[in-house]
Each structure stands twice: as structure tokens, then as C-alpha cells.
Image (cartoon, rainbow, N blue to C red; front, side, top):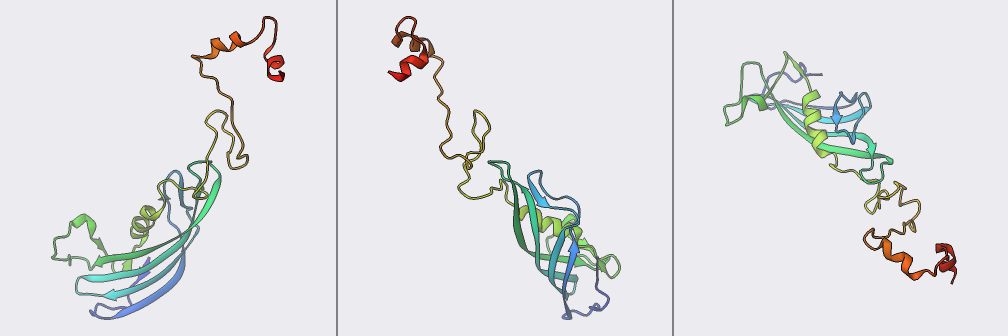
Length: 180
């Protein structure tokens, strides 16, 4: 919650705020997000306007999750721009704005939680990767391909498997044939 008491309700007055706050819950997706309680850096400007208080600035934090390809843990810095109008109680903007999109001041207090979530979550990657060229996991055995770039499996097409025995001499094992 931010207190706007010092700002007053005089259009044109402005206050800058820089502080670190704990991240609210549900700031991400199943794959990546800003952990609840982790620090978020707010550098904001509160401006009194006719309809209420306009909050602009940046929000910065650290998202954690796992790579969408190889499932390793990853961390990523997140910094987003925030712009939100908080209307004075009973004073809605007259523009074509849906009532659900307008947030209201609670007395002299601004509850930033919803605005933080609305700014940070869409800025997170939909499919995070540990690096741009991450090869992922082997589809056969699940081995991490970045650890062994030469990893492969000799896969025989089941439609041709019966023909493999035609090239062997009777009584010769597969190992003997490979040595020849």
C-alpha cells in the first residue's frame, strides 16, 4: 500500500517513491514467476490528476523457474514499466473506460498488488529457456543434450527390423557381423 496523503488532491502535484517491497502471491505461471516475498524494486512517480492519482514508473525483480526445453532451474531479471490510474472514490474517469479497468484509491491509500501482477506476469516469457540454443532433452531416454552433444540412439525402423537378419550368416551373432 502506498500512502498518497502527502500528495494531496491538487492536480499537478507529484511525489517520487523508490522502495523495495515483497512480491505478492501468484506473480507468474507454472513455469516461471517472481516468488512470493522476494524483493521487488519500485521506482514510481505519483501524480495528482483531476480523476485521481496516476502512478507511473518501473518495477524490477528476479523471476525463477525452469527451462521449457531441458527443465534446469533458471533465474531471469524482470523489469517492466507501470502506468496505472487510481480514481478518487466516487470520481470515475468520463472517458470510454470499462469500470472493471479502473482501480480506486482506498481513502488515501493505493493498493498496488493487482497493478504489479498485471504488469509483471505478461512480461514473463511464455516458454523460458536457459539459453537461446538449448537443445533440450533426448526424446528416447530423457538425457540432457547440452551435457552430451554427441548423444544419440541407433533406432531401427520397426518395418525394416525383420530384414536385418537376412545379412547375417546362419549362426552368426549381431556382434560378429559388426566386427567384419
